[in-house]
Amino acid sequence: TKYRQAWLNGIKKHAIDWLHFWDVDGHVSSHLSIKAFPTNFLLNDKGMIVLKNVSPRELSVFLEKNLQNR
Image 1 (cartoon, rainbow, N blue to C red):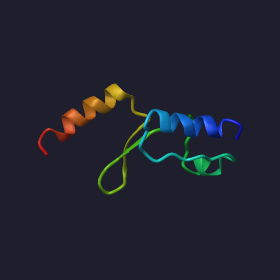
Image 2: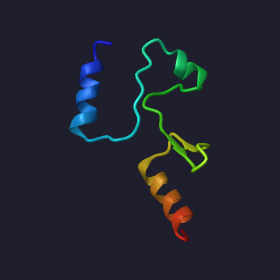
Image 3: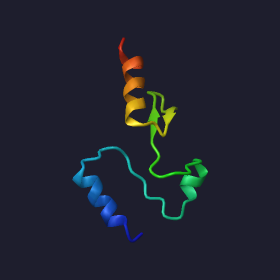
Image 4: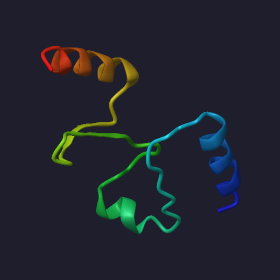
């Protein structure tokens, strides 16, 4: 918990506008099979996980391929 304020400051400084979770005791992350931090998920419009731990390049390729015809 000693890094909590630095974490919050970084979120604000870099305008990282997605949801963030602080799971101090690890119960939630363990339940969700999160084994590395940070972990990211790409969800579809139904809230289902499409990609997990995707790199910026992989995300770009995925979005270019899947959003072309929308």
